[in-house]
Image (tube, rainbow, N blue to C red; front, side, top):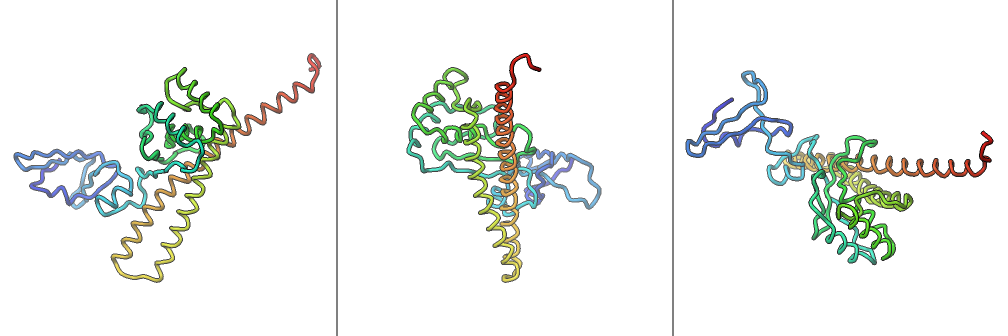
Length: 262
């Protein structure tokens, strides 16, 4: 534990994984840092400014991390859909605060925040349930399908399209829609990163190099998020397709083999 006079805390650098605690006594004008590890003389003391993605660090603090565990990316819902207004009306009607997710639907911009999905074969934590629900709603083609989703919401916990669709083909289609949107974003990010790297040989100067590196850190972190979501969605769609094919094959076999012949 160390005591510092004035605002010397402002000179401590950021470590997103640090669990050091800062205590401030404004009356005595003393700040205390309770360290999360033993420090030898000369070793830099690091604190956490908060669980911020690079997009926040670069705007509020003027730096980025080469690898930031808190990176995330925002997705905006598509604008072109003949049933868009009706779908948004239903989403707003049935939206509710989430307990297990770290993010919920924005009722004005219909934007969603994706975080890194740690395993492509896990439960997809990192992709908000609200985003997957919205994809299911977007894939509905008729008023009747929307009313069926609303009826299911009323009969369960009141939240719209939070359960996998009973129509497996439509469930796959909804997640393939997300996969397609994310794939396009990945291509855009790849192109931007390549363009930034090409600037290395054409521009010089310390300020430019620093800004270019921060931009690369920001884009690379968000690209990592997109690729993790893409891998999970691809695996989810493939698993559903394989289960459907296996189920159909089983039915086909049962129809061909006479009862009692095995």
